[in-house]
Image (tube, rainbow, N blue to C red; front, side):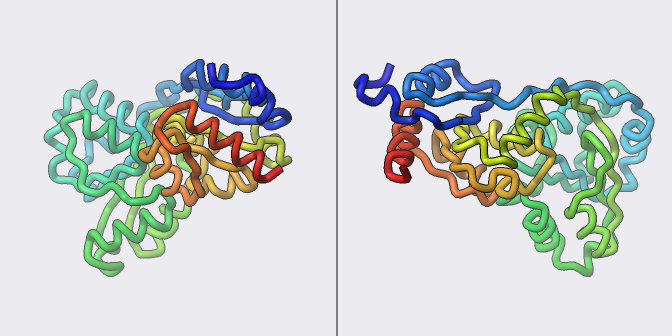
Length: 269
């Protein structure tokens, strides 16, 4: 427990959002300082309702130049399905592979699949620009075919920018998420209504997971007005990639992060 009963209420009246996977001591220490702690709902990740489109893309990988993975589950479900269909990971060697976000890159790096590009920021505009630079300019994009396994076929700004450059991009459903809709609606209402003061990210994946839950690559917009604190430099780096102005403690520990949060509240109060 952190020092001093005089500090027991130095976050009193503040609401802090944390990951559902956060260590229990994070909640304990925040509540010890008087904060109200809530965690975002943890979605269930399931097989797609149909494998038809995913199977077709795997059987016709020769027709693509690039694979783009936005999430860890996209990697897991795509590779699992590839194995189920009797294909070898070596078939991906002829494709360029783009991993968006630290958690996604980690999943690929733990597999036998190579990674050609890890964009410095997960924002769609940045991803597009780094792919454009990698291939040698906008003109080269018009000759390329991209495959993006994902949870839905809703086209975002990355898809639109690639299509504007006359590239072809196919989005195939590799998995689906089942969220607690009531809890997600409540969280969105709190964010929109200014009901959350701080978010505490305790790992790089927690940043990416919240972006995925909120279905956005523009996490800074979703957390507008919320102060962001990170446990360590690697977590802050991912947060900064989403254009979040992340703050942290003087050392990578739960105590230090919460102490910095309490000091920030004291100064701003």
